[in-house]
Length: 222
Image: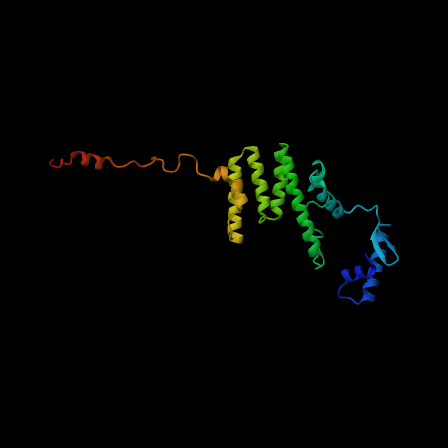
């Protein structure tokens, strides 16, 4: 990134000359504390290529995980940056878009990993990851479905029903909408009425009293 752009981003309320001076001081202090971390070539400023950045690891792993071939599930769940927002203690406006981009990547990779682990029968770890995604955004219906799918795959119908009820209640109370067709279709095995429950008395038959009255009616004279 150019020095002027970086200085303007970090000190938007300062004049350009003052912002550039602040940037020079920040780079000097950073390299004093950790020599070689920040490098400058001409007007450009960047981190040294040997520096490991958790955000870069998260983006790289997330993109691999959501590809068709994907990446092994071992180790992916421990990628630095998978948990938590980007620079959570900062309130700068310029972070909003990047923070949301990383949040969406994190949620997608968590749902994808949960599905793969469940397909391999590793339900405990799959559920832990799916619930982590759900705790990040309780209004995310796909995260609710991820939890429900794992319960169903494990054969826990009661847990799946409770997860669906939570999804339904959250969506109705917070958004005023019912679960989507996809979610209801997923839960159809325990939402549909059991066979024989409707009309337990069976189909109604015509009353016999009318037949009896007809049989006792007098014959017309002939």
